[in-house]
Image (cartoon, rainbow, N blue to C red; front, side, top):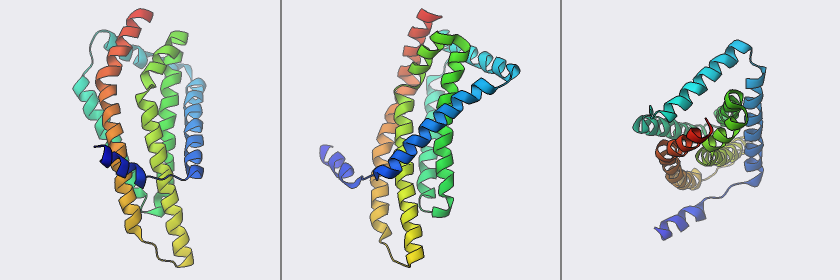
Length: 209
């Protein structure tokens, strides 16, 4: 197992410039998602409060399906993993990957602000537990993946402009290594989000609310 991990890590290299760009994009997405809740009208805010209250009550009263959550989480995460990976080899669709990453960050910011809107300071504590560590790990995984696809797309564009040939097999092998590496973490975070996070949330909710 150690040899396999060492081999995977040796094949994974990320350009810091693109990683930094993706992290800045994530921060902007989180901030935008948080501000979006603030500017909503009262009717929309009431709907958010109703939804969050219902979600919290469901956790509190054990009206929560662990298996369904696991299925939905895996479906969403691995669908995005496949979509982003495929788009990485179609350089003209690269803006879609950037939008996907921004949207995921936007949802995190929106969720944080929604909990705070509903429960004020208590909501801040609940929201931190809601996103940490699984959603933070997920957004970092997708940030690194998008960073790699941006680098790959720009390389392909450069080769087309300069009419150079590039051995895509090397990048395809790196892709497989990255996807394999990230898949392990996505499975772990999905299990945590489905079985561990709800129990922790329930304990905190019972204390605070």
